[in-house]
Image (cartoon, rainbow, N blue to C red; front, side, top):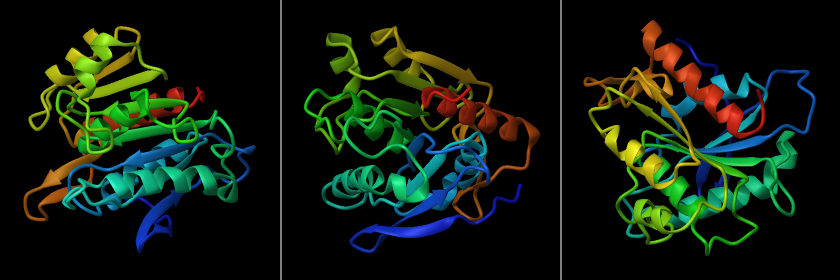
Length: 241
């Protein structure tokens, strides 16, 4: 599967994010999705297949690099990317900027899912940073996040989420067991939940390559189909059917 290269722009301290625009002629402004990658530092390219599939549904998708290996666990990068997405959305034809951010959805995969869900649902997240909804893809939620210092699973068992919560996970995930998503859904029963017949990589339309030691765009039909269903879940979270 070949994914067109997106426009890349700086967002802070030499860090870049990819801008995946909706198809030409899409009426705007369009909903915005900020999509965080997993535990490999500066791997925004891994999410290009999923980001492109979501953008083709009528979304502006922004995918930043971030660095989990730093002493702060990537907290500064993540917060800076969210603040930049809010400020710059209108520049790219998106509707995520301004008071309330009614049409900005925060999403993440793997470690990015843990951070996205934790930040979006924490009561102390400032109103000008809180997204309209959050999508956790193949995440684990029972350990503290870098952004809040709190584990989301026990927190959401004790209090409701302040934003709509959407969970996507692969039933055959051997990296982050699907039990983690099921546990969070049980703790937050109002969350939407999509379980797909794929693995940790397939849920974002990729396949892990031992030679490259990273996830590459998927070619297997099952993984491509699973990734497209994840893109549809992101679009639904953004209010696009």
